[in-house]
Length: 544
Image (cartoon, rainbow, N blue to C red; front, side, top):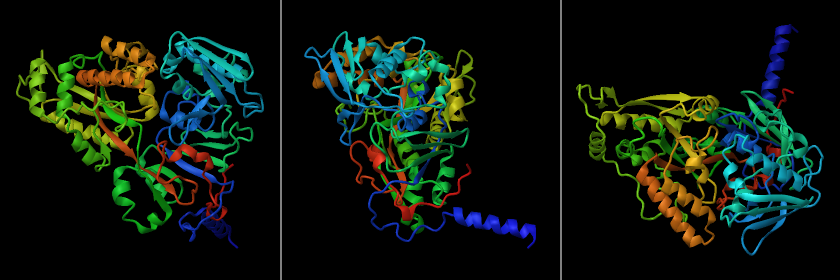
């Protein structure tokens, strides 16, 4: 047989073995839970590292959440429960919390996980040399101690309302591997050792991160053996991979969710669609250190000039909500008296005129002191944000503002522009915790490189409210504090709230064990219990 023909047959056989085009006929059949298999998802950005307190971005947190544990976590109904801690006590004066760790905890390398690791992590996050946006919460602890291997104790200077929530957000790191290292520049960020369900198997730059089952998991074994996150920045490319059955999980955009998938019967047979209002929003943010954005009249004018409903209808196909406060709609933290800035271009022009901007040379662009009102909007490779920027650009042009748009890859966007403060305006999103405290985003002390107040917002009244909100334990009084905080924020317009979109996950029907309808914590709350029945697993060829 000729060599070329042999090679051709071999390639055909390999292609057939790896083909995912023919879904199993029994995708809708019932199967009992079992262990094994590989689940593949798509990520829009590649993590800068896997130490969340340093990386600070959602891509890092998404992967690291499978590797590390915190003292506490939220259950399906968003109630706190123990993760590394089996129980905890709060002192009568509300200033001291004593955590009691579960016995026989281990790191993935087999070493014991003790309260010394928790203490070590607290010292890291509160060290002024650690470049982290998360340190403020933990610096309120006046004293932290580990009196024995299973006890970790923290004492605050005064009662701190988000205290327990904060300990659900700090992922504990191994002292025996990180002691003496520069946490900002450690190889550990690329090769972490954790304690949770999975451990790092492989990280191929620009391609994927693979996690495998951690036999020493402190929470017991997960059902799926291997998780693969492929880096696919373009959602359209992600969707092509979903249609080809090369990935199992992705977040759809509204067009894919509302139009494309329903129109493809074969895809409907393989893919289950979910809908949930997330804990995050999209916004247009100003660099308040750059003129003219230091003028509140300019910021408000731009707020009036943007048609938010147009964005929701055009970008989200109606699958979103307008907001006037940085909280999830329907929660007690949303001030019911606040309404989004209405679309009012005449009001926008009036405010710009008051700020000294007029079209002196008749070119259609407003100017002041001979300088045109022109700026650049930066955003990352996210189609919803890109489309939003284009609609904003058009509306601002109608009132005489010249806007250019630059779309950047996430890592360079974050490192080159956000962390350095080298930008005028951004379109970005915030994912928020369940506690209403937003000190790390809006307090004027949180504007150093790598911290979250990169727009440089500074309002002494807001600072005071944020400080009060952290100390108020009465829920009703605390609610009033955050209602007033939201009112001042809306008045100042350091950002323009664009919309809160629905999360629209699409998941292959080969993945079982998913709660539907989604509980308050979302469909991913129990992903370690998801499973893939043996008959439904895709045939895979390993390149390793």
